[in-house]
Image 1 (cartoon, rainbow, N blue to C red):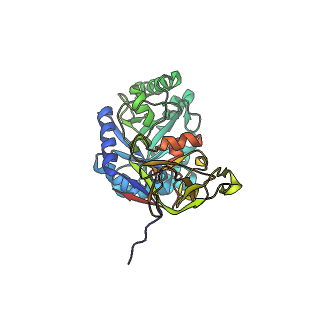
Image 2 (cartoon, one colour):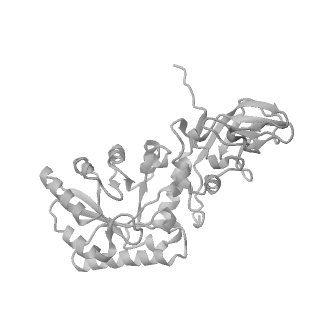
Image 3 (cartoon, rainbow, N blue to C red):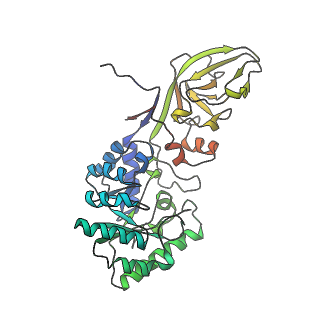
Length: 372
């Protein structure tokens, strides 16, 4: 049967992924890595990403909910749900052997009751809120609550973790305060006779900016977006991590429009003179941000071509002044290319007023993921 390709292709370089993982592993050793592969590995496709990382020595996989967790179990490494668990997720998590987050006393009681009914141990990681303010046991009461939780017979306390809201800022005093709070809590628990074997706090930005979160007593780090070569703009990319992806499409039409022609919805662009324009077979349904409208550009035959008018669902119109020989079928690079004309995920994030996570998770199901 003839294979039909998608109009927009996202190429993911697994060799660069493995090299990024190697660089991270080298700098945090002897700590090991728990890869955060939630949301289908940030939209890049968990099966291929996970296989490459496990083959490279990954310790565990972290996800956000039970369906993701069950799908990740086939890679034969521990799978951890981060954050919180919903009541209906507890039983399948215990039955499948997924590591369960414990974010409070009431939650611990529910998990314990179900584990005892199933005659199984629920392997748990304690979520401690040291300053994120989103989920977890508040650090002020964590020692008392955790010591009570440790007495529940249906729970096996394997890990304890926390999360940073601003580790991308290398001089943020609150981040160091969070690390100190977590370390002091761990010391208190050890002094009381409760030693938890796995401790993790460092996310992608912390790995580069906060070395104190990548050494003892911590045992693991949790790289996510850094695996793909991206960090917050304020972070230090001192590991020389490289982008793993390019996004490209093709020109669907090339036309000469007369002066006075308007382009796109709301007629936000008007041709002041006759203009050679191209229509790219990619729109916001494929992840092209609306913020590119009249602001961004694509690359055709190595040349930057500005976006004209509003990005629509299926198409984006661009100026072809720089490539007068452009033709239907020409490759259009949306992300990638060679410097100095390359387009980065950070470029799109900046135009959209967001961060790289949002960009990666926005590529729709019409985008073909291809692994190279």
